[in-house]
Image (tube, helix red, strand yellow):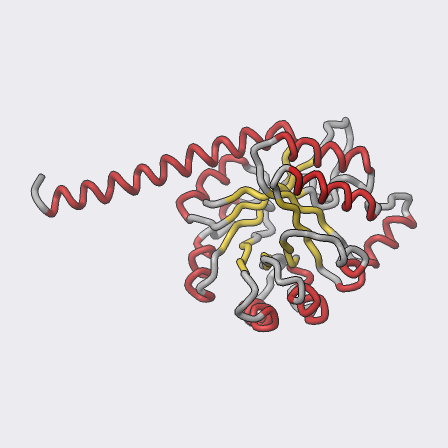
Length: 256
């Protein structure tokens, strides 16, 4: 596995202090990639009518981009609609993630294509292979694209990690994993499937009674380093086991 991507999603609740907790953790960590999410305009309007403004101000993103680039790290934007994307499209994000709800939004995809930046495409809620194929076609061959398998389930028997290999075979593209599961130990199994990237949601503050938008499958910041270390160790073990297997095959073939 090449990289672990930290996803803040909208777990900051539009609160600048909470967003800065995520940003500052990322800047001090060994992680290289961070994403923030833009939801639909309808979502923002509904939540604002209920008393929560989930939108972070443009100045926060400008500051985050400057700080992240000064550390030679990268920041991406997860998007699903053109209208909300347009509000920040002039800023210098390093990569984009198209959420499952945005895979069929051709106007959005065409706009992102003009940025000529790497794009991750999530399978989300039941995104079909036909939809993925069309999205890839619209982006074209010159854009660096990867797929993200994102099983939306908390049941182990429904994860179907073999889908990673199926997507690789079908599209001949790098395939990563966008975690929407709540068992950290399941993540360690992923190394056997060699995902090109792992996207993990985080949540900043342990507050009694608080439920985050991506609550069950998000991990607190103090858990993220543990997850990264485990992945690094499992990846090394998997690589070592692969080398030993090759040596044993070689030795058996030549009767060593």
